[in-house]
Image: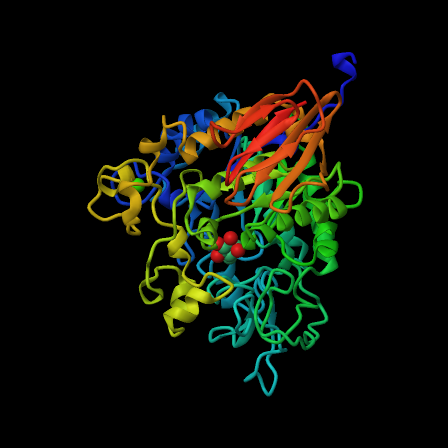
Length: 549
Ligand code: GLC
Ligand code: CA
């Protein structure tokens, strides 16, 4: 086919994303807190590893009660992270390396220190009076207006002494929800979006996007038998989020926001939504004809089971709900959850297989900083957590917290990035990093893995580079192979003439597989002793391969 006739794929469909939690990535000025210059200093590392897009957790002005997810000014940079000039430099440095950068947009709520909220609570009649979700209480104002809960097992309504009314907060009380039924609010937020797009950012990760618009009837949420929050019903507390979660207006908001982003015609930008719910609900965020968000996170992998069967089922499920041209976005770890390597007893050999799956299945893969070197959860008792969730749940016995389906002390996955075996893992020269460095840094760090073929980091690098070589791995179709031994996951990716097979052996036994095609080439293997010969693949225990046919 003529090159010009070939279908063009937008960059965000084939990209790989690396999540940076700025506070813990790299500290350049020695105050113990990661900063923007620190990120710039590590761009070459990310480029060399092979990641194409970076997503930055929030660095805007904030009282930092939720470490940046409580923004008090969307146009300013928190001074501990740097200046506007630093951010401009970062955008430029990223683009210089042919990489992309996306910011975190927290549209649902602001900090209670934002001047919008201060104005809103101070004056029932003032200009900002309807900018947040205010309501009179029941029983002469003494009780909340209805039964709506927050996402955190507690009441969603907070009483404000100044205004003598209740306001709703989906997350923590100091994060009041904005009122998107008010067109001024929407416009103010779209203005923020345009501002950063003009500055050159390549898109946004959208914080809790699916709870932004609540029902204006203020009807009570219905009863639900399950007391615990889950990804399909995040509201929890014996309640179904019928009027507060995944409200149909949010799907419309997705389309409107897409419209704003489409105003920027110079190149395509991306919207990646943090949404949760059943697949047939959340896929509506993408629109019927791809006119909604470009991508949404699928969080099933956070709770993966290490088995061929489990992963095969997920591939099939995702192909059912997100067939091309849609594409799933998969994530095994992030700044809100226990690191997923703890599900496989911190075993780097198993982590290699997870990475092989993540970079070869039909999806946009998102890696959380440190995942590529096998960083583990830190042991920080709930009572000592700086995370506001840890504070809220400090009464919970530690053993219960350890077993809880949600991570109550998110500090454990937010400890500083482990760059080397130097003091404080090379993260800071300060005596006191904002969170303690995980003591395992002497063994688990970038420097020690950099040039070791058998390391996890090296495996990531090889995988990311194989992925770049084959269009089939980036945008090809995916088909699972039915007749493999039980503990082997097999699938192939196909794009035009290019056909790529992937086999992953989840068991601790060697397995021989008959390979259907002649003239094939082993393009990648997690171990150097896997073999391909005479239409047979010899898979060592816990290993996987990529074969071009
Ligand atoms: C999202 C963020 C989380 C934050 C919360 C409130 O879930 O990922 O870190 O605390 O929203 O903004
Ligand atoms: Ca710093």
